[in-house]
Length: 120
Image (cartoon, rainbow, N blue to C red; front, side, top):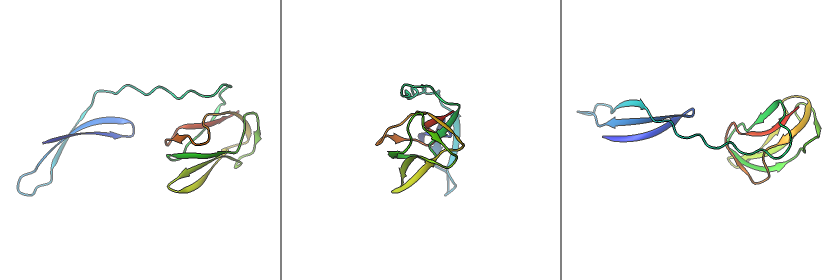
């Protein structure tokens, strides 16, 4: 019998797997694990947070920051370049607005869903 800890969509589960008899598939008995302490939120640089969040679409590394705080942007304007799986991906403004904050810097590693920037 083996016990594994599995995380699915942010929920942590302890799963025990037993070997089946006569070639039967192993049986899994999931049970909720004790909640782990939440990681401290990343500190945003000084400046006000905007109402529109621009999140990382996938995990990767920030190659370039193309916009600056206070810059007016139109929907589709490139804010950042995110490298993921050896490809450069443009992170664009979801709507017209003004850049309120840039929460990452060049070379930073980000996870999917991390707030990269905010717009007003």
